Length: 520
Image 1 (cartoon, rainbow, N blue to C red):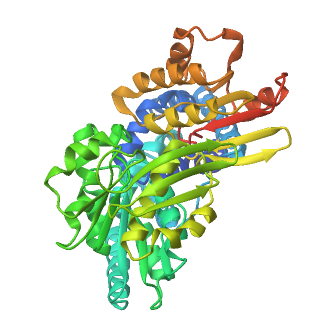
Image 2: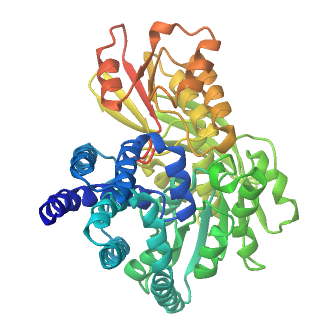
Image 3: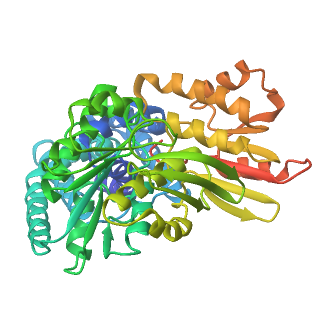
């Protein structure tokens, strides 16, 4: 009996490690949010269907311990080990990061599992222990949220310490002007564009990359804020009601920019009204003399903005109050446009960025920088210096192929603008996309519409993932798009190989629209 238990343990340990690691990776990608992770498990149950075999055998072994169930148990553990080891070896887009929080989760998980096995042995002996090992391996995806719940008091205490330290550091720079930037999309781009403009004249700190969570902001302040800084541009992201308020309560912004409001993260917000209210938590947090910069092209913002004072509008057309745009000229080399300030001052700007949505984002940055003390004329040179934010309509030249990398994220407005930008190029226009996610009950509808837009703008459309892109294909073919020019692949690399092999006259333009994270 002991030998059989030892064999089970030898197989159990590596199988446990690989299954736990995979689920820990997904848990991290789901933001350590118990509800989101359990929803992900329910939605993606087929991704781990092999666990059903392990659970069935584990339950069988709990009630019946003999040579046959032992062999079945060995085979089940071996199957789990092979499958999850293979998952670890696959190329992942965003690897598991062993942060201090992850290490605490792992430690607690090991303690909990060891305690369960010890209690099982004490009360029921070796026969039950073998079955329990298999069941514990299978249940790792569900146990991690439970472990996270156990760790919550510790995590909250650690976070409070870091938050209070960040607040202390902010108080040590009394002249610092803090500008909050939020929006369903465009906020990261506007943040970096504004940094490029303001740093021509001022010492500027920004939250790096896509750091836009409370602890990401806190980490930036504690690690990078210096007494010489004059501006702190703070990106504020949200997936739930109250997320923006939480960041505002830490940094207390003097001014704010709302770049957009749209159907993003509907799976966690549940309604457009909740998204509107959450983005305007930034407006609610501003002081009486704080300025609120608003995208005048966005209907959701226009609808919500009425009761707020000190508004500064910016828009990509020549109609309406605030900062406006006229004489737009687009080419493969970039964009030229004229900005008209509320004072009537005008200036012609040139930039290397393409796409109408980039115009509105740059104009938003110009509006803030101009209001903060820089003249439109002073802004001409830094606007020319603005570079595309990585993976956001970033142009990459590859000989006779131009990659338009818009892979960071995708939303109904941005995806439409991206394919319409692709349509302006003279050559072979190829779209590669896995579609859009986190759009709740509207996901199929928005992906279908995206397919109709893409059909009008592209010569070839290459879809990644048959099941998820089915609504896009439906929309594409509803427009009479040739079936031979719309292909479905399981991996991005396969689609790229196909795109490079396409024969035809002219330069190739390949638009990469969205790149789903590993949990999708």
